[in-house]
Amino acid sequence: MVQAYLISTGTELLLGSTLDTNSIYLSKSLEELGIKVIGKSVVGDNPEAIEMAIKVGLTVADVVITTGGLGPTLDDLTKEIACQVAGVELKLIPAEERKLREYFERRHRPMPEINLKQAMFPPQASIIPNHYGTAPGMYLPLDNKVIICMPGPPRETEPMYEKYVKDMLSQAYNLSNRRVASRIIRVLGPGESQVEEMLGDIINQAKDYHLALLAQEGEISIRLIAEGNDYDDSVRIVDRVTEQIEHIMGKSVFGYDDDTLSSVVGNLLSSRGVSLAVAESCTGGLLGKMITDIPGSSRYFWGGVITYSNEAKQEILGVKSETLDKYGAVSRETALAMAKGVKGMAGTDMGVAITGIAGPDGGSREKPVGLVYIAVVGDNLEQVREMHFVGSRDAIRTLSAKSALDLLRLQLI
View 1 (tube, rainbow, N blue to C red):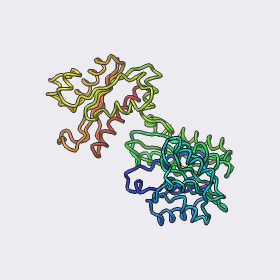
View 2: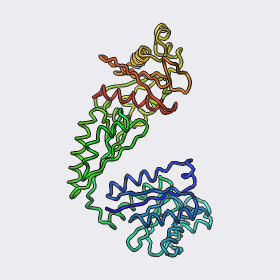
View 3: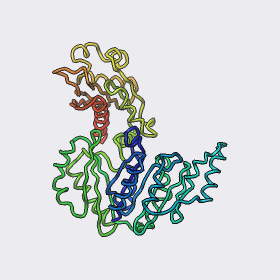
View 4: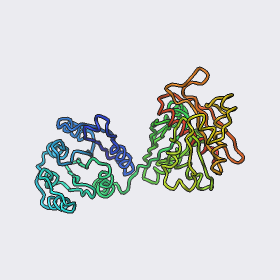
């Protein structure tokens, strides 16, 4: 199997001020193509670090892909260092110089001469067009290796990969008849160690497939990769193992591949013709944000209200003062009253409410930080779930919103 090593350059990535989304995108895309990513490096704008990363990549993998460092400034050195490691010389390519000057002319801006470095390539390299910026990419074949340099901004990297790099790699390594098939099975509910224990037999019996677990914000992603005799055989293996996982995990499985809780719930609401309104307290609008992240959510989502104070719960949702006095703002009774109130106010088929203590303050022995109540009501439905979360304020709010979506999903299925 063809192996790749990814290098993301940029001090802003190394310091964490910018997220390295390129390596995530490329890892997934390369796997779908039939190329296995065996390592990644994030390095700053430092020539020695970039050189070391490229040398490591060429030692362990067939394909080294860099992102970033193709700009015109003095610290944009990735292409130059890659050519230095490969032992090839950069030369000014007249056709690329013309494209560069035309780019600036169309924008009625003078071109700084420093930009000419973006038109320099070794003669043996293939120049990869960049339709969204000034920095072309480079495909540099070596004896039995390949170095690919792409720009750093994802809006430039992703189209360049999809339009050019994918086909270049497919042709170079004859990947049109790929053997590998994969699937991500998405789970909410049990923790990572619990999922691993539940799937122990499937993991231990793996021969022609591999399972990897990734925990993120309360969800578990089970990545299943199979390699059979051919692609169709690999798909059959993926289907078989998926069925075994579904049998064990049950309704905890909420989706596959690019599914999100919001998209799954949105599809269920839309296909069933069910309208929804939400009332939020501790989540402060996060549930509504997750729902409206999905394009077309206006078909089923009336909207939401944030009733943070007791006064807002009473005046907007009609929660009785007696309920708040007797049970408190964080209680089963208040969550249910909130859900009924927003459903009645909006005239929707269903109402969902969240009330809890996100912390770090405000908890007590009887009602600690992380205690959350989620209510779902419909015409013939009333359900309240008590949840206990741990973590930061943001983590508790995120887990609360996701759990509300999941409770709604379970009712809709």
